[in-house]
Length: 365
Image (cartoon, rainbow, N blue to C red; front, side, top):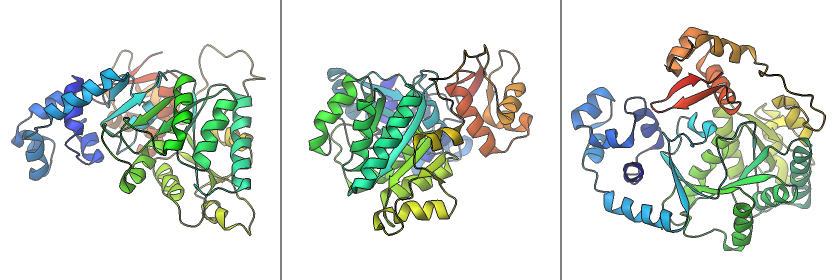
């Protein structure tokens, strides 16, 4: 039940701990019903964490969150839910659930998720390159989804550019959905929802936008994105943290070089110089590296997608109708964990396979 998922999330356990628990228990209800010995011996939890789970007293608070969500039309999507974002699920510290305002379908096939991040104190050059990249991606495919953080500066421009070019956009926020921060972006948030996008958070209502929440929010922006574009960043910036996280998730990172004399692009230049990011001055740079074709000139699609060698190896590792876990797929395919993770994510997005409860996978075609 969703009530159990909310109660579990309100224990504020480390996200990586909860991701670990899904390998042993198929639902939040079973985690909360487990004994201390089972949690420590079977799942290998530290005794203090096991005690916290066993003594869970968050159900009243969970009921209040559930009532709030139902009243305001907010979806509560647990990690084990079929509608949980596939890209995000494949990260080692994915949130145990997300609260979503808006009707965006995270399971729709064919979407291209591009995260756009950058400084709040953007320059005219940063704004221009953000608009240029989003506009060009939109011209290539209406299935591009822009993911950002609803903050001042580059985030706000990315969301607005997406809407102006007919794209759906997803905003990940660092607080509960009983408010919008910054308040000046309330109208923007409303437009995002009206245009079939979504406002997403892992935080329950009543959670203020505190500084640590923004750092945690960055991992969700990175986790939801196939490609992450750093439009403008000085030498020290939360955008560089997001880029590092995306790189650790084996996602492609891109950065605009700016001018060598502009301090507001020093972080971007550092990413490019250290080979953590691909140089990007236009939407085509992202599409080229990602292997995305231009829908305006695309020929009729074949009945089956062309697979990369890694995807083909995973596909061949499935037996018809079999439910199989990632560890077994890695063993059968001979791929590294990183290669398998990236291939599994892309195959889910293309509707070739599907993740089911208990972190198992099934082949759809």
